[in-house]
Length: 222
Image 1 (tube, rainbow, N blue to C red):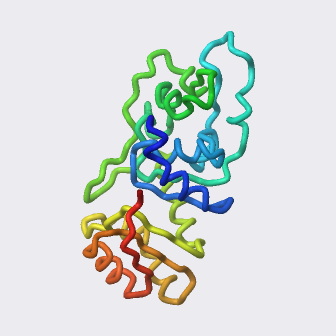
Image 2 (image 1 turned 30 degrees about the vertical axis):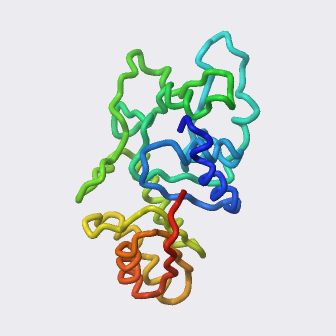
């Protein structure tokens, strides 16, 4: 996240997206978040499909947010496995860690900001909110459930879907179920699906999954 030059490929890709497009990612890191923020197409207060209130950390800071943080997100970023820097005291809350926000907004926002909800807790030492890849995923937190639900809606409504960097392993039942609507929608030409991966075995897996109704490209992301 701290090397803008190494993420130029992400900024180039995200710059081609249209307002209202959705990015679904299984990554925990904040490379996509930071890249979207750098090109002024996304904000952490509304860009994850739920609203969060950010406030200055210091009580002596100027009221209000920097202008860059008041711009509504054009793109929705759905992080199915949660994220580094996301913390949770229980299944009903999600708190952005202070250092996560500082790194995410660094060099673009001088004011040190924190999640307003963090002020409710005296000792904000919470568990990371990340769903680790496994045969059976645990997504009890209500925010993660909402993210998966929003991903399902996006997949059922999309006219074009581009897939990068996901190998579709047979053991990932949850993702196979999430992507299942694309199979029957592609079969009746309701959606165009393009898979980009340099690995021929991965492309063959997608060819089988979509019964041939998919565009396959030996192209890597980055």
